[in-house]
Image (cartoon, rainbow, N blue to C red; front, side, top):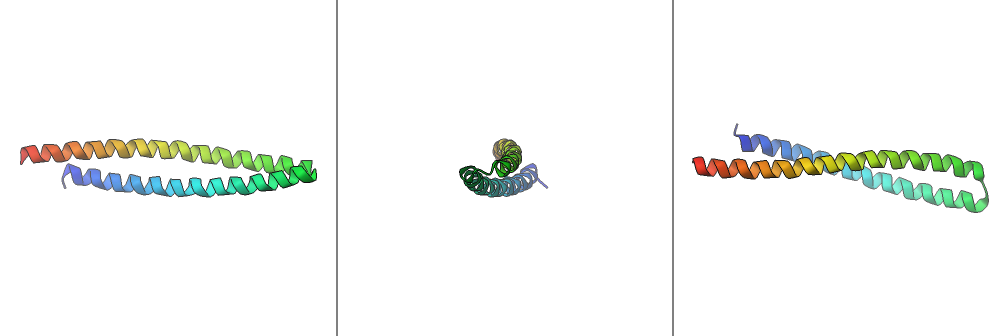
Length: 97
C-alpha cells in the first residue's frame, strides 16, 4: 500500500470524526438555547431555585461544548496537515515515476 493511500485513509477517518463532533456541537448549541429559554422563564416567574438548577445545567453543557470545540479544532489541524502530506506524497510519487 502506498503512503498516499495510507494518508487518504487517515484523512477520511479524521474527516468523519470532525463531522461527527460538529454534529454534537450543533446539538449542544440547541440544548443551550432550550435551557436559556427555560432560565429566562424561571427568572421572569421568580423561581430562583429553578434558575440556579438551570444555570448549573447550562454550565455543564457549555463545558462539554467547549471540549468538543477544542477537539474539533485539533481535528481540523490534523486534516490540514494530512492534506498537505498527501500533496507532498503525490508530488514525490510523480517525480519518482
